[in-house]
Image (cartoon, rainbow, N blue to C red; front, side, top):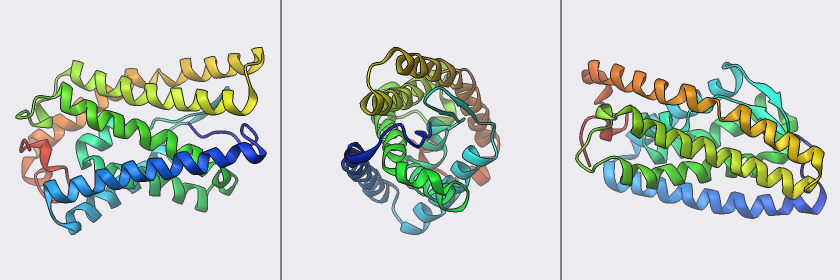
Length: 226
């Protein structure tokens, strides 16, 4: 989902500063809600650190390939949300992306505003969606495949929509650009095949290791409905 250098140039990149500010506003709200619901900055800091490390691995360790206007990464947004909570997941996505740019890919830093918007806004969306598709008294470890699939489609679809927006905003509606956007979208949505299975796998593991996964390093909603 990295926007390639040159896709959005010149004064047009200013828009990314505004969208990033909005995305950080949504992330701040998720963090605040996390602190109010689960209490304690220490737990949030620990969960955020784990989420940041996971995001860095998603970018640098997991397979990734350039397709069309961007790169296809296995960014498991719904997995982060379920395991660590929305606030910690938001911090992890923003910091993991920044660390990856600073340490590995400094040429991605000018696109940071676009990329962080692309990650955080869909996270906010599935944070709200989870309240609708998962009953209030259902622990996340009891999620069904259909619920996990719904969250995954929403998150990955949001990423594809934002990448398409940036590409069309930067390069216009030429045939070549539309084809590049389409090829990226088709390739990226294959992540939907993998992510729900990963979600159910890690939730099953959390269920069998409740003594560990009910501690401060994980989302309290895994086991205790809130």
